[in-house]
Image (tube, rainbow, N blue to C red; front, top):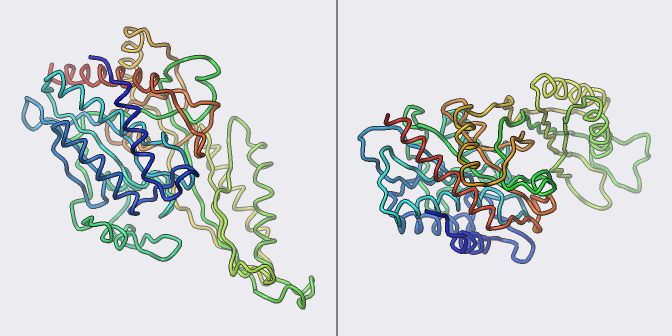
Length: 411
């Protein structure tokens, strides 16, 4: 009962076609036309593999194979299927494809599990359209309230609910999942870094995921003519923003122990070549392995922001997301290790520097996560690539782990 490498490659290739930027990476934003194309493909494959398909009020997709024992919690396998702008074909998508392959193995080998198996494809993990990130998993577990969801809008002012309706999704469906219906959550993901490839190791077993917070900073000044406004009379929002952003790399370095700070999105208004910027929005992504370092970085970032408050310049900060560092389930890590060894798949323990849906679900159920190598450590770019043989190896590990978890629960 080994994973079909060719089928995995085909799923990855076909899903990569659902992009708004052909030839320039995968751009698949939540509730877009490309989202609809990908979800249609995923649901069709779930049905092909004899799964019962449903969607919740966020548009998360669930494919369920009922178990022999009634009213038992599910073992869930999956990841997200949205992307960053001009991203790669593997981030998130690989975990969904692995879930589909596990379902195919259950069907082909005529296995009915003791407990339900669910394959899940989650929305808006990246936060590329509606900000904050991990929306599908946070919403599913009740962390994102109905009121907050109703207020979510993209940069063009389109509400998330409006975007859902535009592709035929129903935001009135039930949104929150009862944690008691989940036995465990397993997620395969590409590493998005260089360690596994450099060490020539096939699989990383994730011990912990870094804590992270995302801030959105708005700097307001006064627009003016670029040629007629003297330098000492300007309230230039972009200059103030640039001074804050320029301090952040040094701040991260001073905290040390792997802390990182990134400004990934910046919007300037009115964005004219001959107009002094009136307003700037930018994001600050802060990550560290220890919560005290995350909190220290947030405090010191806000101090630098406050230092730029002056006559004519007003700055506000909104915390879009805050998640503590998370340790994944010890028992599942042990099973992943034993399974990898029994299949003679080289492995090591790892920390995750990226956020994942597993870090949300780990507060509610037992979670396990495996990484596979990323070529040259690249991710969030068109060059992102992972070998299908490593994807197949990860699938085999998760397939056997799913069966072990079901045996443990039934016993």
